[in-house]
Image (cartoon, rainbow, N blue to C red):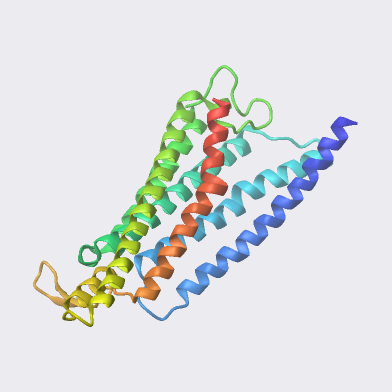
Length: 287
């Protein structure tokens, strides 16, 4: 009786996972199309948002769908996990989990950099640095998550010997510690950068409000300086070859800046609340 109930629950959960995966595919595909459809120069934050949406698409298309399909086939036939499928599932799941965490942290870092040091942000070729960050994120995530498939796992009871035990404690202590530290570092970095961004934003609004009260008595220099603290206008910069060009990255109105800050902060807090912290807690209890 208990086995039939658990199988029925697992069957229903697998169907829900497939439905959620399809919804994630559609939602994130729409996000990518919405950003790429703009006939304008794409900013670094927009590129990072596209990469984050692409990571979610891969998470729904590969590990989530693989796990749900295997569970459904196990109920209808004698099919079960094998070594190859389990290794592919574990490698892709942990690669995408780390890539998601690091991409969210990179989004938070770029937003902090853009708000806290806007001129330096525009002079440092932020788009190129964002692309380099994405390449580094995927390289580190792929290398670490592939190691269990090529031998870095518990040799006493291998995680693919009976079914597919993809919990880090079943894979190996070394992998679990490294994955936990990297995940914790990404979560802490995202939260710290969001905190600095909000502090800078609130400080700029408070400074602007104080200067508005003094406008009737003092010159408008205070107001302009407070305005440039949060909203830096377009400037002309000179590169190392002496070529002068207009730099638009970081030139936002106060309303747009606040909306982008709220969007990035919401992404960071939603990820930490729904994904990052629960994964970290489950890992700590399983070790």
